[in-house]
Image (cartoon, rainbow, N blue to C red):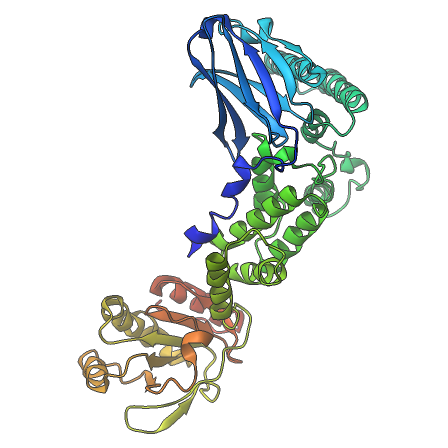
Amino acid sequence: MKNLFLLLVCGLCFQSVGSFAQGYKIQVNIPQMSNKQVILANYFEGKVYAVDTAQINSNGTGYFQKNNKKLARGMYILLFSPSNYFDIMIGDNQNFSITTDTLQVIDKIRFEGSPENTAFLGFQKVMTSATQKSRQIKEAMEKDPAKTSPEAKKKYSARFDQIDKEVRDHIAGLCKQFPNSALATFANFTLSVPTPDFSKEIPENTPNRDFEIQKKEYLFSKAHYWDNTNFQDSTLIRTPIFKSKLDEFFNTRVLMIPDSVYKESVNIIEKSRGCKAMFRYLVSYCFNYALSNKYMGMEAAFVYLAKKYYLTGEADWVDKKTLENIEREVILTQYNLIGLKAQELKLPTMDGDWVSLYETEAPFTLLLFWEADCGHCKKQVPQVKTGLLDKFKPYGFKVFAVHTQNDKEKWENFVTEHELFDFINCWDPQNQTNFRVYYHIDSTPVMYLLDKEKKIIAKKLDIEQFADILTKEYKRIGVEVKNV
C-alpha cells in the first residue's frame, strides 16, 4: 500500500510548463564534445533526471530545444559524463547560449542572452570563496592556543560574521537585480535566519539555565525556519537542497506526535496555495512522510491529511485507482487510531455464551484477532499466553481473543492444544460486528493494547514490545510488576 502512495510525487520531476508556452532553445558550444551527446537534467529529491539531449555536431555546437513546451523553473545540470557536469539556472528566459569546455568548465563558461545565469555563476563563486575562507578561519582557530579566551572567541566570531555579511549582501543584491527570478528564490533560500543570543535574556541564576536557552533557540529556529522560503515558486522543487531541508525540519523541529506532524504539514502546505506545482509537491511530501513514519500512532496524521486534501478532491493529480486505495486505507484506519476508544464487540464464545469487550473489567486488555490456520498465529498466539498473559494476569491483565474464521473445530483444537483457556475466546461467524473494518483486519494476527477505559494505547508491536509497554503502564498507575 505504501509503495502506491510514494509514487504520487514522481510526475513532478518531469513537469514542464503548459502546451501554450513558447518553448525553449538553449545553444551549447563545447568543442571537446564534438559528435557526442550532452544531457540536460534537473534535480529532484536528491537525484537527477534527464529531460533533454543535445547532439553536438562536428563544430562543437548543439541545441536543447522544444517549440511548444518551456522547461519548469529550477536548477539543472549539463552533463558531459557522470563525473563532469555543471549547474545552470532555468528561469523564465529559456532562449540563450552557453560556451565552455570540458577541462576548465567554471573558468571558461560564458552565457549569452542569460544575465541570470551569469549572475548564478558569480553566486556559486562567492559561495565557494566563503566556504574556503570559513574553513581557513576554523583551521586557524583550532591551532590557536588561546582559542578559548574571550578575546580569541570575539576575534574569530567577528571574522565569521564578516563572511556571513558578505554573502548576505551579495544575495540581497541578486534579489534586487533579479526580482521574482528563479535565481533570487534559490539564493535567498540558502540563507538561514541568525539566532539571537538568548543568554543575554536569561539571568545567570535561572534554574536549568542552559536548558532554557536551548529551548528558546529551538522555538526561535522552528518559528523562523521558513522565513527565506518562497513557497509561491516551484523553482525550489528542482534544487538539490529543498527536500533535505524539509527532512531536517520534520526530523529535528517537529514533535513526533500525529497532531504536531499534521499541524506543521498543513502550515507548510497552505503557504503554497497559488502555486499548483509546489502545492502538489508539499501535499505529496507531507502525506508520504506521515505514511512512512515508523513512530507508533503516526497513521493518524496520514488519516487527517488524506481527509483534508485527497478525499476532498484537492489532490486532483491522483488517479482514480490510487484514490480508491487511499480511501479504503482511511476507512480501515480511522476507527483504530491510538487514543481512540476501541469499538464495542459483543460476541459468542465456544459454549454459546456472550462476552462484551466493554464489560471486560481489567486495567489493561490485549485485543487479539487471530485464526487457527494462520502461520504467524501458530507461532505468536501461544507466545501471547507465555509472554503476556502468564506474566501480567496476576495484575488483572486479560486477553480478549477473537477468532476470525468460521471453522469452529480447528479453533477449539488449537485452544485445547495450547491451553488457551484463560483467554476470553470468542468469534463472529456472521461478521455482525464489522470487526474487519473497525480493526483493519487484512491479515492476522492483529493486536491492540487497551487501557481500563478501552482506549487504544498501543498496536502493531511484537510480544516483547507489548510486555515493555505493559510494565511501564502498570508502573504509571502505581503497580510494580515483578519477574518480567
